[in-house]
Each structure stands twice: as structure tokens, then as C-alpha cells.
Length: 361
Ligand code: F6R
Image: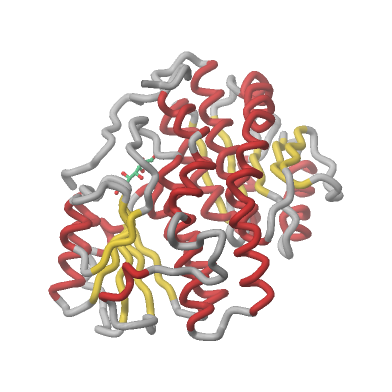
């Protein structure tokens, strides 16, 4: 059942190249230059505004999607934790599309958010993994994320599929409404086609490095994860993965928020995990890391070969086209959490106090 792996979690992390492939299947075939999403035919065209409602890892996927949907399709997006959304009497405009993201499709707060939106006349698009689940049934249209069954309580491949689906939506709407630059569209489509192979060939080295780093950092009490832009939601996700399976406290922060508080915590026993790939925000992240180093903080940095960054634990991953770098950073974060938890002998697939699907609020 675990396909020769020690845990479902590691099996599912290694399934991610296929998950991307399956999520693209029929939506971006080798013969297609444009994204096809017939599932959206039941909705009234490109939305004027989007409200994303989700919990946990699915919420982090939604935050990531916001950056791309706003940048490429120029559609204003608000992302909200479902348990906040449902109780705060939100002001909802019927022109707004609600995107409800849920792996299980059974999360009580997300379902309540869907019902609230629909009761006020809004259309809901479910981004969901489990076919026929409650989220799928309660939504006006469903984009299945095609990740296959996820057994490990900590979500890994499901997030990868949610990000793929959100990327397809941003390409689809951005191309459709003319806001997405043709060259970016072409380059990303090309990059997406090669992404499963690139990830497949990179995963073994990512695991080796995660294994090595886990031995260096498994005795710390706390970790700070930093990222900017698209990599800020990944910092949140990296921290969530570490805390839920290794029980090491971790906090994800937007790197620019460092000097607004968390920098006070930095000392040699409080390491920072930075996501610092080659993008326009790299110089900003780099300067945040200089400040961490000046306070004797240890640093692990996920970055790209050739970038000028001098930190004690540099983790070079291959370059990918624009936002596709996320699909290499995400498994690195998952693998680091996995290797730490496994090294510490934790129950990786069934962490204490957690359930796979949260059907009560
Ligand atoms: C974290 C995790 C949870 C879920 C959250 C939402 O690894 O699995 O944070 O992401 O409970 O679940 P779904 O996506 O099923 O609505």
C-alpha cells in the first residue's frame, strides 16, 4: 500500500510529479496551447472579484493563488480562513465568485462558508479532491484537483494539485480577458509541460538534502520561516508542516515583517528557514537574511545555483519558469518536515490530536 515507502506521507510527496500531470490532463494536453476548463461553463464567465474560502493548507494554497490571479488576470482576490468568514457577516457582492478550496470536501467551516455565500446569491466554484464530497455537491461548479487519495494526515500532494489548479485558473482567466502577457503565457505553458519531469528528477536530491539538514536541526525548539510574494504562503505552509508532524514550534512570516517584531527572537538557537529563489524579490529577502546573520541566527535558504547568497546552510534547487519555482520549493519544505519528524521518531502519518478531515467546527 505504501509502495515500498516507510510512510504514506513520503509516498505522497514522491507522487507529486504524477499529481501535476493528472491535474493538467485534458486541461493542457501536449497538443493544446491554451488551458481548457469546461468545468467553468456552468459559471457566468470571468469573475469581477474572487473570494477564496478555505482552512489550513488549503488556505495557504488560496493565498498563493491570490498572487497569480491578481497579477495575471487582474481580478481582485480576497482570501479568508473559512471559520472567520462564516461568522463575520461579510459584505458580499453577487458579482463575486467564491472559490472554496478543500482536499477532503468535508471541512465543516468551508462548507458553512459555501452555504453562506450561496444564500446571498453568489456562485461558488469548489476546488476539491474527493469526488462527490459535500463541497463538490454544494458548489455551483467543481474543478477536481485529481491528486488521488491522500492518506497521510499532513497534506502534501493535495496542496500541489490545488496550486496547479489555481495556476490553470490564473492562466485561463488572464489569457481570456487579455491581461496576461502572451510571452508569459507561452513560457509558463511550456514550463508546465516539462514540470513533472523536472520535479521527478529533482526529488531524490531534495530528499538527500532534507535528510542531512534534519540531523542538524532536529534538536531546536523553534523555527522561523520567511518568504516574500508567492513564497510567503509557502513559508506559512513550511511552518505548518514542521509543527504538525515534528511538534517543533514554527512560525511563518512575510520576510518584510521581520523588523516589526520577530527579529527580537533571533539568536543562535532560533534558526530561520528562508525561501529565496531567483525572482524580483530576491534582493529584499537577502537583506532580511543579512539582518538575521548579524544577530548570529542560523539560516537554511532554499535558493538557486549562482545566486549571490552567503548563508551557512544553502539549499540550491533547480530554476523553473517564474511561479513554477513553487513546485520545487514546496516538496523541499515537505521533505524537511518529514525528515525531521522521522528522525525524531514521531508518528508521521497520524500526528497526535489531528484528524484527516475536520467535519466539526
Ligand atoms: C495540514 C492539513 C490541514 C487541512 C485543513 C483543511 O496538513 O491537512 O490544515 O489542510 O484541515 O482540510 P481540507 O482541505 O480537507 O478542507
